[in-house]
Length: 261
Image 1 (tube, helix red, strand yellow):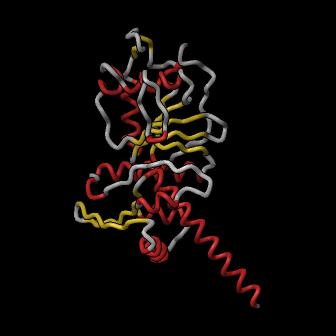
Image 2 (cartoon, one colour; image 1 turned 60 degrees about the vertical axis):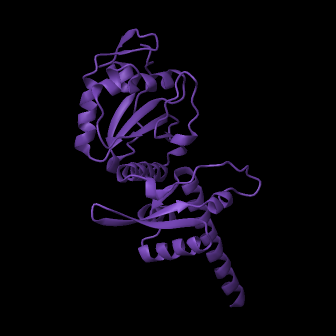
Image 3 (cartoon, helix red, strand yellow; image 1 turned 90 degrees about the vertical axis):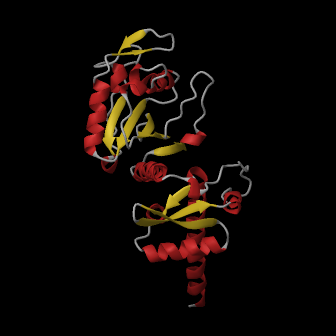
């Protein structure tokens, strides 16, 4: 009986340590998160049990818990402390300085966008997508310093850049302006940084409207300002539009055609 009790205690301690490590490394990438995201990350159905674990980490100065009130609603935000950042690295793992988040200066819109990105990552990993790279960790070149919200690898090996789009920008910003986003993405694809771009929106209606905007783009200009056909071509096929609740989709995109065609 004593042996079983010791084993049970050791098992609980190991599980607790694994959950703490997972959250510290999650916050190392995102800086701040919400209680529902922690519950998903820890595989918990009970909010009270999750809060108990978070309070314990707060007492150890690993995380900071702050309440944000906006639009008549209060949300508990979980952010990483400098101490928590230091302990997020395993023994023998090089330390990397990461900026911590002052949640009092973060806007509600920014937080909503962060929650969308984190939800997308949790859903992608649950579906077997691997190798998530956050925006701040995406390396860029001097000629194209654009960073998508995330980068992840599908089970079939295709690399997908992710853009969480809560509001639609102007057509000029996407396609016709002096430094359009479509061209930025196509340059990364030509440089083999990734293969596809998924624009993911909070509603299916918004995703459909953004898709129609891209369909209306007849041509895009390359870095030498030379126009190339876009609508109905392999270039347009590299851009997909999805509803967050239904993302990620099955790995069915055809990557056989070059964006140079």
